[in-house]
Length: 404
Image (cartoon, rainbow, N blue to C red; front, top):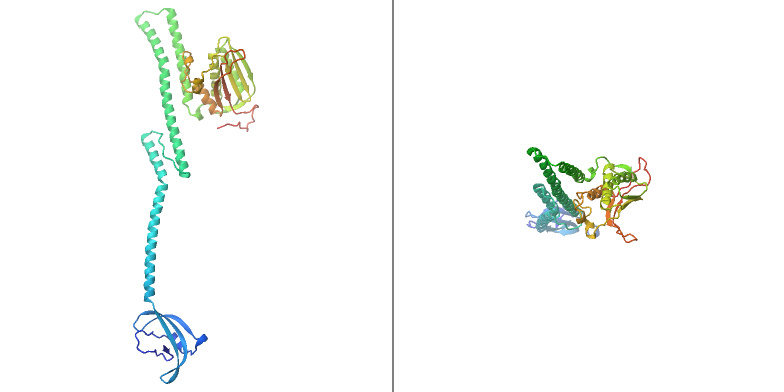
């Protein structure tokens, strides 16, 4: 208890609260009940312990036979509270540190796991760059952006490997095809040179035959090398001139003039409707000439070739032996020749050039065995080319649609 004169009761008690001016004002107020004055504060006991103090006025009392006013002070030691707060702070700090460590470890694990496909991509790319062997692929799983990147990388690596294989195969096939005319050419030239060196001239008929053979082999070599140059160029560089709008009917008409010279005994049934396409004029004419040459080559003597251009569809049909069903999947392969055509002149590149030129122009080409004639004769083969275009010359600003 605190008296208004500043005396504490009981006096000299070690656990008594040290009195402050604010305590004396509460003790001197003399109020009690609902109107009693009170306050909270931090203080100390007489022994120096920190406490939380609540002081409330108690009203008039008799002390040592005289009236006075007093207040009651209630204290609560702060050490247990401080110890509890310190414990809570320590536990909270340890828990926070543990959460941070676990979160960082989990984030690092998740990041490494999420970036594993990128790491595999990097390793695959480094392997390809180091070994120069495309075709390496990585495992793909999931449905996110990294998965899409992995799929695109696998497709690119596979395409590069296929391109390299095709290049190697083209070189091997070209070497094989070049070996025969070069060997024959060398043999004929050796005979001519030996005749001159020994002073024993060849008979005039044999000499003329050798020169004719050399000339034919030179023409065959020139044609083969030209075909190889066309096939070796990338798609955007197939033609020697940029793509332009041209009349496909005019291209077919010019190609027919050349085909008639090569098959003078054949009858050409022609029906051409105007059709304008966007393509390289030189390579497009070469593709049409190759199709007509193929028809002329397999047409019987005094036979006929049907040529039609309607609504952008070019069909060239001969009435020869046709194509065996097992040969149809290979007709556009490079250097492929059917067993029945291996004794005929040619390198097996003509239809491959047709397929590439038509594909570069945004169209499609196919070759099939035609149906039989009503009189029972064989139907031969029919080549079909479809090219996007228009039946009328487009304006300068008009773009002919192309299918990719």
